[in-house]
Amino acid sequence: MAGQGSGGNVIAAICNFFIPGLGHLVQGRILGALFYFVAVGVCYALAATVVLAIVFWPLGAILHLISIISAARFRGGVTA
Image (cartoon, rainbow, N blue to C red):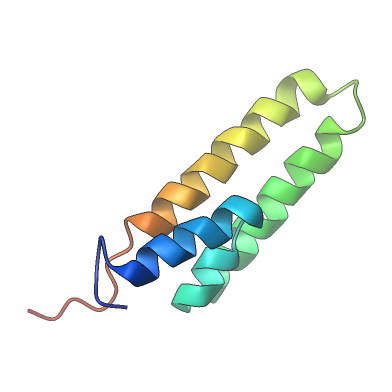
């Protein structure tokens, strides 16, 4: 990727909007992709139990938003 604000980062952020972690995978950050996919998925799954929804839905939504922002602001391999 060319750096922060590049077209690749925009695509990665859009990918993260639909599937958390997918944008990180597009950028080549495998551990970040795995973390966000599992963390947001678990939060949303626990929110589906309705009893835990008041805690885990907002937490999942916040992590989902952080994953989008993280993909959009990524600066890959800046060597200047």
